[in-house]
Amino acid sequence: MPCTGRWTLTRYLIEQRRRHPQASGELNALLLDVSLACKAIARIVARGALGPARPDAAPGPVNVQGEAQKPLDRLANDIFLRMNEWNGHLAGLASEELEAPWQIPEAYPRGKYLLLFDPLDGSGNIDVNVSVGSIFSVLRAPGELVSNGRAATPEDFLQAGATQVAAGYALYGPATLLVLSVGHGVVVFTLDPDLGEFVLSQADVQVPADTQEFAINTSNARFWEPPVKRYVDECLAGRTGPRDKDFNMRWIASLVAEAHRILMRGGVFLYPRDTKDPARPGRLRLLYEANPVGFLMEQAGGRASTGRQPLLALTPSALHQRIALVFGSANEVARIERYHQQPPPSDATVPLFAPRSLFRD
Image (cartoon, rainbow, N blue to C red; front, top):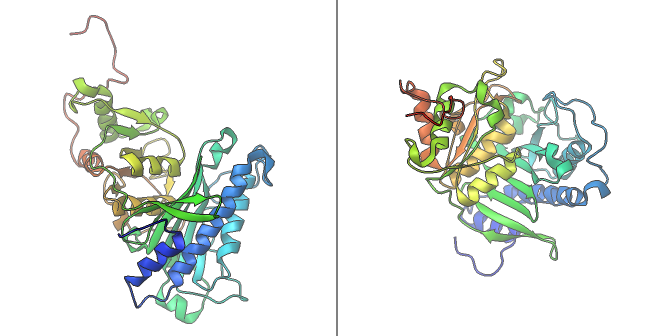
């Protein structure tokens, strides 16, 4: 992508639209409204305990996910709704924080897209000042939803991740970043506090195919399935093990921060299916977290999977469906998929938990 000078998000989107002369410009306008919501949330997050929603305030009501809502969760959710319901580009919205789709008020025109979002991912880290973010996904609304003007239903949002028109996230860290794909690679914008604009800071992001970093919550090790145990054990065995190289482990417990680290320097992230809660096939939300992150990874040359199958090919079955998620460097994700398809080696050992001795052979 040719780039001279400092491109704003607006200019980038205009250049992308020129590649499609038939485009109406509605997607551009929608993404600019999404970016405005992210700017507003960034300002509130940056103020911390001095802002309008104190991170140490008492938890609010329990949301549809069974989680107590923090004040910032509710405020970020409201910002996303108010800044996108009016613009005439949407036929409906769906939020991780709301049980049912949010309908476009009758006072506003309706459009041809659907917006799904996690308004504040990783909000549990706010009180320790760890990076958090917002994740979003844009789908085309079914034709009959647009033509009939009916209310949006959960079924309208149940589209495979491969059908996403755009996806991205905002990362509220030392700098506020907007990471975006409209189906032509992945780009990163940095919020310039002097201009108040997102400015292109990295084009054509590529995830290295190989890595020596993995991210997983090892406190769940006793619940892992054998293929995941095998993969982690081989990483931990390091240079003396079957992988013949040392690995580092990372775990931030903020999906946006984990995804950004992997986009920038490679790695693999695992939040696998386990036996801790057999009723749940996974922990992360397919539509609000896994699909948009998976879309970005694959647009950057990485890979996204459930561990058993490609993630973006999966047809959702429920609005708040949870899923196992593995993403990152393509060769590592492929290896994890392969381990799920193969029986474990008969001489597999578990170095993390095996008996240790100074006198072992």
